[in-house]
Image (cartoon, rainbow over all chains, first blue to last red; front, side, top):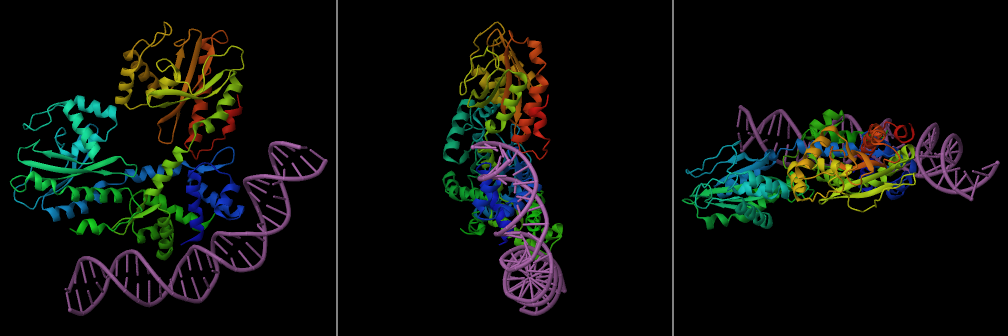
Length: 259
Length: 259
DNA sequence: AATGAGCGTTGCACATCCCGCAACGCCCCG
DNA sequence: CGGGGCGTTGCGGGATGTGCAACGCTCATT
């Protein structure tokens, strides 16, 4: 839309492939050298482009700083909430959002079930890390040594007969979760409560959060809950796309409002 | 230098602080809404800016992709080599550059000593990981669980009486190295050879490579070699600045050519 | 249901600001 | 000493970005 800016921005992907000198930039842009020079200068003043001592240009530190700052100021909750609310609206069940932080998994958002029977959980409360679906999803994505370290340091309380009994079983479960891209908790925390969850990923593919749908089996059976898995996964994927600022716009309403 | 581009780029740091709508962007830029709209559109087309469903703008995925691609295509060797050569020129000793990769530390560049007595090493050759200064620097920066995992899995060959004897001693040494920001190998690999090394860091502060100066003590004593530490460190810092695309230009010649 | 405010969007005429040209300075190499 | 390559500068013409005003839309209010 704006020719000048358009040209200037076209320089960035060009430089991402490796350093280039003025002539190369001008040529690949299809403009005169003096034009390329002025654009590069402007980019340079903003720190997006760096000049190394052989005079060639490459991407500058500011770019990394910007990306980092943007990530830090990104709140998964803000972005996820409407999707969680929509899913709750559609299914009627409790929806959770959780993140991993320094050895703990914590709920950061929750949309309550419409049904009178509710499960006990609270935003900010550490999750039952050895059994919860969201915990499995978040831990499954940790680098292998850290995953082992965490698994080894945990206690494995036998909440129910179906609770994860020990580190070995937990690591095996995490491998499965990692493989299949979703997780469940079928009565592992409280006998009568089941969950299905899916991961939310950032632009780099790392899992930044996890969401789950929970329901007591007096309301729906485990099978019925599992039938919701596609919806849970597509919601998580929609949140991932939006969170990572994906250019694929794929109208969010499709996921949020449709059946 | 170019007004249009200048304005467009000024939007980025603004959005890095958090999402903003058209009005806010126009106001903080000091331009008419329609102008801001055109700039944002251009940024949007290039994927640098993303529009979330509440219509507000925030930084887009392309920014992260660019930063990532730039980092991947950045070759430490290209950037470091002139600095290594200059340091070799000044000291006369062998200079090494090494990186950590999947459990191994490998030499990726080397500038040979001017002296007839040379130490045996080869580019691409895995480093004696338990004793070399560069290995200590690289491992010291790993996240704690991975560091422990690597230390536990290593063998500790007694090359000399001064070699690192076991994992416990190694981890203790790594802690020291991490603390002081430099490392040595005083006869730990070959009786007569000493090294001093310093880390090279990327934009995010993580150690991306390590360099060292090595000399047999028939040429210089360990004390004389240690006296070079300031030069080694400032060279490593200069490389770090350049590698991370630091806007602080701080003329590289000062480090490369001066005494 | 009607009204109005707030916001994003559009078309247009003006003049600003960017473009390409050509010439210059510099460094390196023959 | 002379030539070629590269980055840099000043300048006039004109394409291009700019601000204005008006429109349409959504949403909250009456």
